Length: 144
Length: 399
Image 1 (cartoon, chains in turn purple, yellow):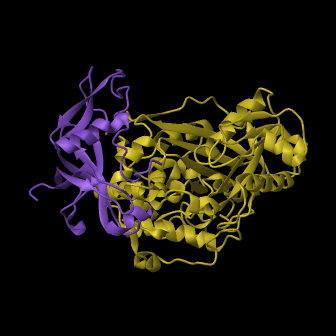
Image 2: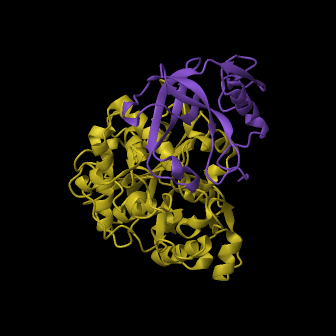
């Protein structure tokens, strides 16, 4: 485990552009050069056509709440202070087969509904006992 | 994703009737015990040899999976038993999906003369190791760099969170309820209270108890999640001809199936998010065995969480897709009054978290008619194995 765990290692090449995009205010997802479908996670080859090369592409940041869990228990101590929290999967508008894992924010847990529209917001992630912060794409209900 | 384009069945040759399980052994199932995985596996092996009436030198085939500490390989086997003979070895054994598919690979080895008596073992010491692990058994997931960089930073970790998210989606798509998940936990706990080696044997659980228990990863309560245990088990396979000369009733392998997802290894990206590859494994196993769902007397599935039981029951075809919630309500899964007796030892929720190997041992015991929560006159039993992108179906029958 790297020193900043559970923050991401923003220097790890395969996901570096995802985190660099968040700093710029862009949600970045990989897309196949050959068939132009989105491919997630950013690990070649393309799962649709087998082509070797994927390119990072900005997406709208709009999607729907595919599913989620409300956490009342922390399996690692760094998550304890933020309890309760909502983590889940957002299906992207550009291709609902791409599901981005993120926190769901600005919404009471009881108000969450399957397939509700959500949009990206960029906020810092911080964890107790871990130095620094990382700007990350989180999701909130549309209109919030 | 619709249709069946999201996965496929492995192409397995017909091994129906090629092998029988002739010896079974449980290691002690405990909370943290200070034991090593090899100590656990050798204890289970000694008991399986005793159960079969075989000497250590008779085992000439070993199956295990290189996972979760040191497993019982040939070097460890010989060191423990003081034997030196040649040993066929395969790493396609162990627990999880392989607890169900190992008999296929053993059958091929026995048929081709590479081995005569094949031992499959699996053990874990996660209760002992837990304080040193990140997120307990989540450690292996925390070490995956895609999960470490795209999931863990958002609190989507460890396994209870993955499967709570699957359960929530299953509820959204099919109307599955907490009471229905609870019916699975209650049936497993009732069976555990009847089982002499179940870790939860002294802790009965009613549906009211379940519903009053606090949510930990909504929609999951603690009772939806498996235990963390030290323990393991072993089983010995040989040809039906040799099985007839041994002391136990003959429990034959009737069918094996393996199903695979094409959506990679990450739960977040599974195309069929609320299905398991049992969709592909079960039909091939039933076809190999030449039997139908109505012929099944007892079922045991790899059950890290209630939702994994629920999905496998429907994906194996015991009810329609999405109908398992209604199917499992009430006493459906109970050993004495239910129409599909399920995890009659208590499963990983209430017996021990040894990743499926104890499930196979329990099915063998049911078919020998020596189980603690015995299903009357059980003739056909099934183990469903699962690892996420793979599933297996093992059909056993009393001869």
